Amino acid sequence: MPRFAANLTMLFNEVPFLDRFEKAAEAGFSGVEYLFPYDFSVEDLVSRLKANGLKQVLHNLPAGDWGAGERGIAILPERVDEFRAGVDKAITYATALGCPQVNILAGIVPAGADREVLHNTFVNNLKFAAPKIKEAGLKLLIEPINTRDIPGFFLNYTKQAKAIIDEVGSDNLYIQYDIYHMQIMEGDLARTIEANLPQIAHIQLADNPGRNEPGTGEINYEFLFRYLDSIGYAGWVGCEYKPKGDTAAGLGWLKTLTGAA
Image (cartoon, rainbow, N blue to C red; front, side, top):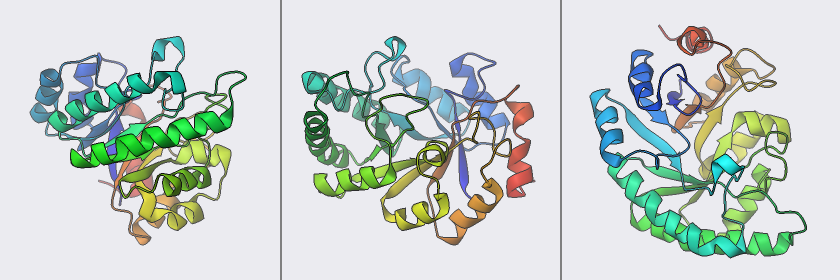
């Protein structure tokens, strides 16, 4: 059965962020992920991980002004210097946290922008970041995201991500495959995961519609979990969903769909 990591940005919002590490451990998770670590000191985060016996499995590079609606800056030609500074910041945090991989959010296409210019900026930024991230002993990921939740997001399909990886030509660039986003954009989940398995370094989940717990929507997670085992997926699965109610009370899916005790 896959290894599940609690996404602390989405789960256990009943308590302040730093207290969510303890809640995740109490719920039986051995790994955690979240969008960004940068609002907290490395020391505080490391302390929470160690105190609760947790593994940090993923976080994102800085992605611009999140509160203002930005969802990444990697495609924006006027933000290249900011992006490069973000690479260094992400390496500092990930290294200290023992986090093996970091994800880049491409960004939203500005009105009237030339997509070719944005594409070339993205590729050049990835060519800069991938070897630098590798030198730090980390993996670099890119994530296709649906255009319903984030209208105008640049990177939307597995095929598109794979083509960008091929164009960059780095052996340190991978896909973060979010089942929820890809169910909306392309479906055919099992075949797509298997076909791109060598490039998929991390998987995330939520059901559709609603982005809630597995078992609340149309996605057959009981099948998908078995399928991931059968094709040899060895990475983590991040639980990046919006609980319908209390997080802990909604974790029955782990037992129901995985057979966990």
